Length: 613
Image 1 (cartoon, rainbow, N blue to C red):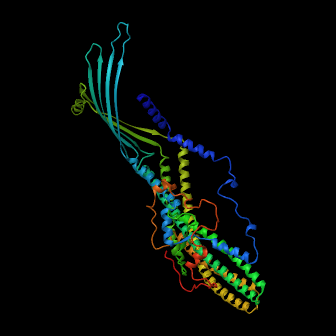
Image 2 (tube, rainbow, N blue to C red):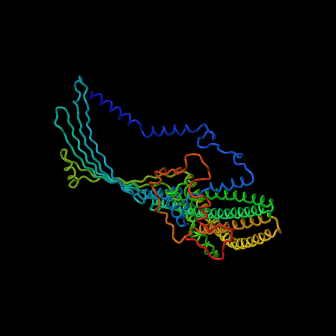
């Protein structure tokens, strides 16, 4: 029974051991292949089901208005959480996987540089051999010599030393013992000790410190290029985060403005209904205000959808593990736009861009690498002429004593052995080396042209960004005047409407004009912040009071296991009303964040608002 159990256990471990990682990889490939070849119909997904039709919501008069207004009671932006622009930058740099992925390239290039710098490390070499050889006789043949048995031991420690001039020196010391025994004769033993040194040194092609250390310089330029590419990626992601932040700010402001429009439209509708009930108003005005109110609800729904997407867009860039992509949390910007006009030193900004732009730095590294390549290809056009030299000595000991063999090295009369010679290889025509050299020269010229072209493009980007900022500031001034004019226009039309001198359609048009002007104002303010970020990016910088150091932000653990937090965490698992994600309603949220609603007032933009970035 014990023998049977032991066999079962051994069989189990053998089966487990035979399931290699490669077998598991093949199984995974088969699973992935099973998902291809047929496209699943969308209607067959259990996560979607039809629940309502337009006829279910059809109604007229006051019931229809009530149903439309109920849509706002269903809408929820999630629980608001304040966030500043500095928090967005920090979270993006620390958590964004696109940045984390880009940080790998400099690490790889740094390891490649480390490997190149180790090319001149010495190598210890050793070999040990024990052998026994028997030369048998042919049985039955008279006169054949008897069997001969040879026992040999050989040990050769050595050291290979590469030279920075391109050659190599090899040091070795071979010690050996041999024992010969022939049938019927005594055993003969011998020991030998043979130190030696050899040199191989190219004299033309492949010779010199510059050629042999050029690969280290090339690895350093590749590390610089990788760092420059990573800096571009970091700046791009941070600027995208800033743009997403200001787009979120715009979405919140537009939602507030559209909700003010709805509240004003509802107030006008209710006032007109009371007048009609008192037989002092026109039913046509009621219908007109119902249309205006329904349009304002639609605008609020559209703005709320844009807000949801803006919140999610910022979350995706930040990738804060504590904030899921669902609608349970609504990020609300706390940094306000910086409304300050600037004057620019164009030459100073362009010089700063030439110094800081990572794209130009990358091309400078590339140009340095191409210069090194030209030097290497020029060396490779030379003939190959190698010097080979060697020296060795032999010490023979008595018997099988290696010690006596070593001692005889210093008291022997035999001369040392040596050799010296050269080997030459001269290609007839040398076309391949010449072609490689000409290609390297052309590639260097190309890198010079690319750098100059990039400098021209950077200058254009800086000047375009300056123009955009100057135009944006002018737009801020114009939009501020437009909002104030639209407010006066609406006030005048409201007075005329109350006197019965204009129809209600003129009043609603004035209200829409005021709403449009307010949205335009916040839009140009946000665009001005984005233009500031673009100008900073054009000069190779980022907005803010502190430098961004990304060199030590690589999170190896997160890259190795990015599936720790699923993007689907927090999402609801059942079907329901898409407008409701729990938490306070839309109106409750905005009532808490903004003053009590009445007729929208033009915002005061006479002061200066600055963000904390």
